[in-house]
Structures are given as C-alpha cells and as structure tokens.
Amino acid sequence: MITSTKKIDLLESMLLVRRFEEKLTEMSRAGERIAGMVILCTGQEAVAAGVCRALEPEDVIISNHRSHGHLLAKGAPPGPVMAEILGRRTGCNKGKSGTLHIAVPEVNALCTTTVVGGGIPIAVGTAFAAQYQRRPVVTTCFFGDGAADEGSFHEALNLAALWHLPVIFVCENNAWAGAQRHEEHTLVQDIATRALGYGMTGHVVDGNDAVAVYEATREARRRCLEGKGPVLLEMKTYRWRGHSEFDRQLYQPKEEIAAWMERCPIKLLQEALLAEGVLTYAVVAEMEDRARRTVEEAVAFAMNSPWPEPEEALENVFCD
Ligand SMILES: Cc1ncc(C[n+]2csc(CCOP(=O)(O)OP(=O)(O)O)c2C)c(N)n1
Image (cartoon, rainbow, N blue to C red; front, side, top):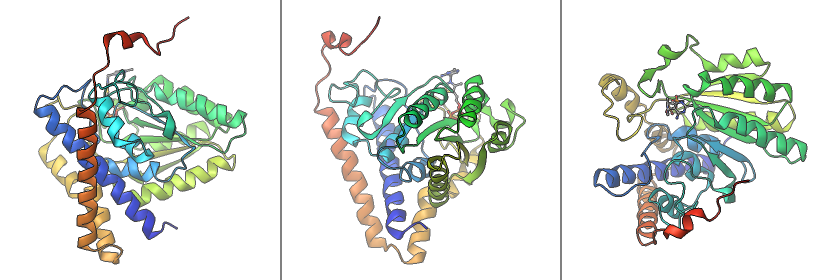
C-alpha cells in the first residue's frame, strides 16, 4: 500500500519537473543559448514520478529524448542538469551532452539516447549485468509508442523474457510519435498486449495517475527481483506540447489537448490529496514555492557557471 508520505513525494516530484520545464520554455523563447533541442514531458510527469519514485537508488534507468522528468524524479540534482542543458562546464556531463544525452551515473541514470528505440537493448544489457553479478537491481527503460515499433524493441523484449532479466519496460504512450498518431504506425491498440507474444507480463496503466503508476512499478519491481522475468508497462498519457519546442503542433487537435489538460496529472493528485485531508491548501502553496525556488537556484547555478574551454572538448573522449 502506498503511504501518504509517498503520495506527497510524488506530487513534489511532479511539481519540480513541471516548473523546471516551464522555466526552460521561458528561457528558450527568450533566446537563451540552449545546447540542443528543447523536448519536454509536460503532461507526462506522473509517469516520470510514479516510476522513478517507486525505484530504489541502486536501480538503473535508461531514458530517451524526453528525459528531464525521468532524471529529476530519479534524484538528479537540478542545478547540474540545468547547467548541462545550458552547455556549462558544471553540467552533469561537463556541458558535452546538452539537452539530449544527459547521463547521471551518481543516481544510476546511466544513459539517455535520442536514437528512437536505442535504449531498449542497452537496458537489457544492464539488467543482464545485474543478474550475472547477482545484484538485486532492476533496470527500467523509458521509451515512446513510436519506439515500440522499432526492431530493437522486439529483439530486446524477446531476449529479456527468455533470460528472465530484471527489466521494467515502460512505454510512455503519449498518443503521438513526432507528427504521427499512434493509429498511423501500428494496428495494435494496446502495446502492453505485445508482452504476451514474448512470454512476459504486460499491463496497461493510467499514465496520468501517479499513484497507479507507482503501484504498477512497485509490483513489476517485486516480480523482477523474484526472478519472474521482465514486465512491460504501457502508460497511457498525452504529450501537451509539440514534439519539441520548434514544433508548432498544428497537427494536434486543440480539443484533444484541452481534454487531456483537464486530466492534468498534478491537478488529479493534488485534488485527491486535498479531498483525503492529506494536504491543505497552505501546504500545497509551500510545495509550489519550494519547487519554484529550486528551479530558480538551478538556473542561477547554471548561469553563473563557466563555459567549457575549447581544449576540454577532447577530454573524456575514448576511441580505440
Ligand atoms: C532511429 C531513429 N529514427 C527516427 C528518429 C527521429 N525521431 C526523434 S523522436 C521521434 C518520435 C519518437 O516517438 P516516440 O517513440 O513515440 O516518443 P515520443 O517523442 O512520443 O515521446 C522520431 C521519429 C530518431 N531520433 N531515431
């Protein structure tokens, strides 16, 4: 059973992600130099928070191009994440990743890849390593519905099931892959049903309900650690913004966006907690303040950080 403390933690985590990304939008519109494309998970925060707050610190995550929520919810420090996005030397990857390939090994966020579907086999590799070394660690891999139609998805899920690897495959089905609707790239309505074809467990989860996401992830984690093999969780959610901030979103019906905004994951949890008497409006206001302050501090840290020197470009670059 999820505790009230954990529910508050989920809300706090979602608020941080929302405010962080709102700030990024503001900065990108103001012409701030952002290293890479601004790709947001606004509207999908329940998946990031629900999954990552259900994991333990030693569990690994592998993320994709829509990574800010995953990283922050896993515990990545907002200052160095912001600094990385702004290409500064104090960034998580010394300013060499920019927005799109951030890794934060300190919190076991080992890889962010923008190759659609590219992270899925990598997750199978890290899960194999944990199983081989008999470490009680689960790998969670985030990818979109578009990625579920890549060849890598099929090979990776087949192998993970065959070897009973401890992987939670999290498909964030936000209804769109770039400008393509889900129905335009697959006839399969529920991607979770594909699990059956590989001999693994799959579930459809309400991806805007942070508590449901948390509980599904806890259960999947338990199964993985009992050696029962991987789990495929399909989180039904929605992308509020365009594919990236360069995208004018003309293909996304306004009414569709509005209907999903009504089911804002933050609003849903906040209202539930107020109704349950777990939270008061005063505490909500404090949480809001805290999230805004954290983001302001992250921006100040990043903006006051130096740019990398040109000669640093080849440091930490390996080749045979
Ligand atoms: C292998 C590969 N093909 C195409 C692209 C270009 N691309 C970047 S994101 C994207 C859409 C991905 O959609 P989805 O997997 O559903 O994730 P979402 O953006 O909806 O979160 C595409 C086609 C890419 N980066 N990599």
